[in-house]
Amino acid sequence: MKIGLVSLGCPKNLVDSETMLGLIHEQQITITNDPAEADLIIINTCGFIESAKEESINTILQMGEYKTTGTCKYLIITGCLGQRYAEELLENIPEADAVIGTECYEDIAYVIQRVTQGERFIMLESLKKAELAPPIPAPRILTTPDYMAYLKIAEGCDNCCSYCIIPKLRGPYVSKPFEQVLGEAKALVDKGVKELIVVAQDTTRYGEDLYGKLRLPELLSELNKLEGLKWIRVMYCYPNNFTDDLIEAFASLDKVCKYVDLPLQHASDRLLSSMNRYDTKSEVEALLNKLRQRIPGITIRTTFIVGFPGETEADFQELKAFVEAQRFDNAGVFSYSQEEGTVAADLPEQIDTQIKEERFHELMSLQAQISEDMHHNMEDMILEVLVEGCDEENPDLVFGRSYKEAPNIDGSIFVENAGSVQAGEFIKVKILQGFTYEMVGERI
Image (tube, rainbow, N blue to C red):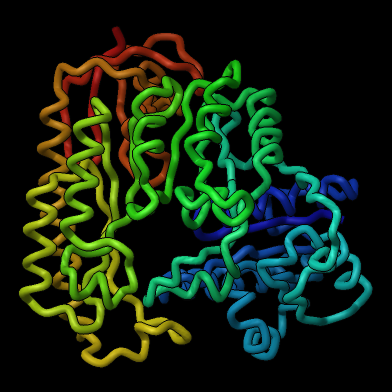
């Protein structure tokens, strides 16, 4: 039997997919990248916002067609959409044989066994939930390039932002044991990984539930000791838990990228309160000033939501002024998505779709100009670049990232006259030109 897996959504979901692939491989089952030749297809879905749900449904239907056009006999739906709409999916998608929830990834071998025996079912609770034994790290088959990997340090979320369904889909915040995380990291580095990207719904909260204190600074200090590791990149930091100890870790640990991913969502105190965010605008401004003062060369990435219920034109203009004043290196913008089951979905003063789209494009346009200006200001700067590939027609033109760019969400650096170099190597590059989403440089 051959099994194919399609992973949608965020890097945290990708780690879950890699775990399932590892467990499938342990069963000596063949894994294929071609769904047309798979006997069983697993779709690990995202259900965070409306666009993600649409992508997940479309992918499920596309994969379901292989039951007619390919060799596929069984279809398993998992991930956040499966957790959220299990009954509806099984009822309305006849091609689906099983829908399993976000607790059940490590039960995938059991699920496959039941499905191939002809059962059609929903499973939302893990067989291992009642086990008291210490968790054993599940095997993973990396789907990222062999020089980088995601390191997930926690499951779930306790923040309960009013617009977000994740706590209901993923449960409360549960840190992985400290030694387990270190063991996973060491195993990845031993395989040749040079960049570890630390992820969780909230990385800054790490350790609070298990140890009664925030242990991300300590974790970064231990990861920094791993021989062979070059970069440690931390994503999904919340401002309320960005302590002085964590700032010191970013500033002093040589392998920790001076790159802070800090979702802020808005600048209006009234809306921040309605979103159930912990910080005020002035508190965020104070943190940003401290980060820039204490971490030389820092790059700050953030995200914002426009069109949240009750957002007035004055609120939006306040957000624009904040973005203009802070001049973030990179920022993602989302139009508010009214998600059933969230507090914000029932708030009055829902914003018209057209207004949300206009504000989205206006803020994106502003940030694009800021990013272009920031990249122009980097001309003549010398950066260390992780090579990720080369142009098919011109092998001397390679592309990669510096510490200032995270994979998939930030831009690339294109390097001319790079010479003989392989993906995963680090080279010194002088920036020649900066554009909105990319830069061009030459190897030195």
